[in-house]
Image: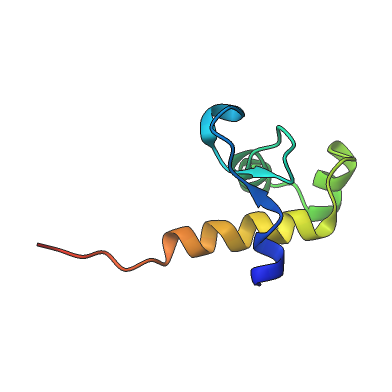
Length: 74
């Protein structure tokens, strides 16, 4: 999974610092929204030909990592 996460880039000057795919202006949240809208991986790749299959996996892995972090309560 660490190799997949290298596909996620964060640049404060691009997309307001939101995580993107390989320096493009395609945000992780854009990919997640397409999955939520019911598109399959194949349909997303057809809609966004600059993406690769591993980009979709990277977006899901990134979201999973962000959600699965410990929360410390004071």
